[in-house]
Image (cartoon, rainbow, N blue to C red):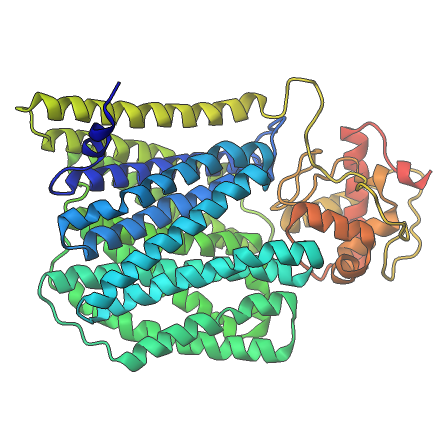
Length: 598
């Protein structure tokens, strides 16, 4: 038994170093788990994985990446960068412990139930704890000298708080308007927008400026530029509004917003790039910093293209672009930025034991971003898929967990070498601390192993939430809503037409749908012609917006998937080819086709 008064000494020491080491190790631990889950998601496109709920893994991955890795590193950088009195750092210990408990609760609940009572409770706990951090840090900033860094950090914290308003709105919206209503999706986008563009981007920039200010550098950033930056972050939310309400006025506001944002980013990045010439970041720290700043520049340039409404629509219609943009901010700007700071401040190292880890991390990020954006562009240009695209993306993603494993090993060896070897009590406490972390990570990885082999299994009953007849289905026209009112299927499969349809499916559909009966982003295609009339299938392809707004079956499927199918302007002729390919797929996979017509 460890005495209660020893728990604090295990986590903290007089200098606050042990607390910081624990904090960073937990953050990297959640980073490792999130990339492992991301790799599992990528494997869906390569092999069939039975008894696996893709959506639940997606939720677990995104929560650990945003609220585990990203949040812990940013909030930790602010705590250890702003709180100068080392004894005051201990005031954050219960908030930190509560946050770790909330994240572990999400890790052990989301894979099994998705959004349910337990997972939502832990998510809510995390939000409440973030308010505690925000309150304490804003008080520290208020009493500190007003500088560009502290002003930027204050702005980022407020955007973090503002982002959570979208989460609180989800409950009332879903209970009154339903989860298929535009406001429900806009609430989710509200959270993501202000997290990525406000909290993460401005938080990283603020920490970078704070590091330079601690070195004695003066930074000129007038107050009006801060207001312009804040306004640009707020107004660029109009892109999410155009997705739900594609009115010209919202496209125009979004176009103006991205122009304002380009100006604001130019001002602040100009200062950071000029400071970079002072050589305060060396070696891998400098390389990571330049990659973070390059990611911000790329983000600004990509958003600058959104002044054109046609490109704005494409940006959220092509899934590769959406994922690539999310990773550009989270993995590029935030991850590379905070890692550069951690090395520069000596919080982690870039010695020979971790160099391979940093090289692999950079390689994984660059390769996956190139694949995502190149493939997204090919889809935009209607040029199909790269040969073995999904396999190459999976292999490139394998570098992520490998790199984090090297970095975690480097963190442990670095911390051990810094500990006093003359004090047996310190050695005992360090061993207990390492064993506790080790057991927790082993338990977490065991959960992943269980998910890979037996999640949802055991009774022989499939838990796949594929496109099936929705429960309590409202009576609707079985042919759907649209111009397709009659389809002549013929006596058999038209091989040429099916081949044409396959090319279109490969180009436009496989990012969200599999050919088996397992859900990816949307339902699996297997068996669709046995459940839906051919007219319904073609209307869903060619008239997707009206179908999602008015057809009860499509609406209930949208409520299950929580991802609105984009309108890709597929012609009736091309839709007929897709239908023929789906008929062929059902004949091969299910052994029967066209049951819905009988």
